Length: 391
Image (cartoon, rainbow, N blue to C red; front, side, top):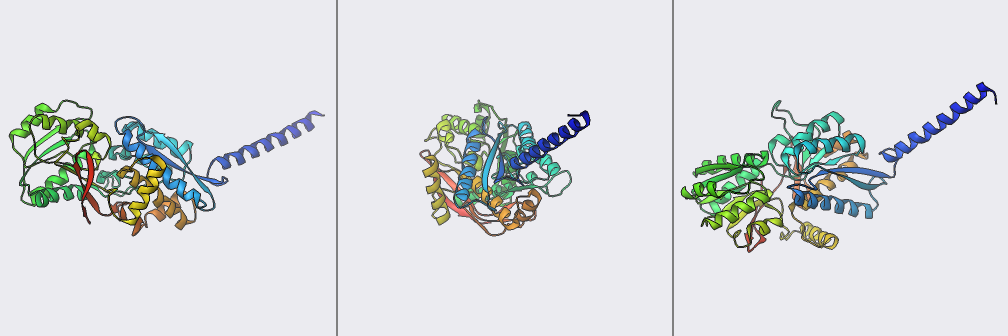
């Protein structure tokens, strides 16, 4: 073969290989594949691992159910999970990986508000939506620096102003509390926001905040501060942190002879809480949540039955909300008739009166879920449904 002919033949081979590689690349992405990939940026390890594990299970159950019915847009769904290790900095890295390397169509965002906020710019830069099952701080969907809505960030949860006011009203009206102490995780945007909104509503109701104290994530000894709170003799103590520290706080408070009710938010929702605090110590404590497995609605009963069959345990709110968030994405894909991230984002923003497991969801102009809350009471280590509060 002459040199010119050899070069021409080699060029044709190279072109053929490149074309095959391009087709293979399309096959691993969205357009040429028989699967649509969704991402999940979750706390699979670290301090919030029980939350992330539940959320992953909820998302996987939703995808399994949809796939068993033929999938969406004629394709099967798959889930790519990135572990953010319960750290905000890692959440940004995980978001970057899902968006640029895994090239997913949409992302289940982290559980913690601070982690969603940390990765929000990645979503904007790559024009790919993320919906958090539970992040409830207002700054998650609205940039405080500009006052503008974060175009590609959504949530399936109600926000802290509602959750904080629910617990303040419960304290004043159901528990007849006149005074309250706040014990806040100052390393958490979530806890600080809830504390602020509880205080505003409680004071508006005529109550008095007699003590405001703080701690940091991973603290373990709370007795000195609890002794100060005890001296103020509050009717209730509002501690809207996460279950790890809250469990120790309640345990140590009971050891100090503090018997007043403890109140909190959805960060309490973990099977680990009774293990840390002790079942008896948790009596006379209450927290706001997004759903209760004891709710008698048909949607809750069906979900709980399916989840128990799949995982052998009762689903918590993180599982339910992640299931809802995944289904909301899938419904948006159906309406958009596309897995294109921008088109899915545009349809997701139009969500109205969606019949979710955690209640009827409408996304408002700031991409926040307008929905009901429930009050959960702890009795001998078990969560019991106390009441539902509509928005």
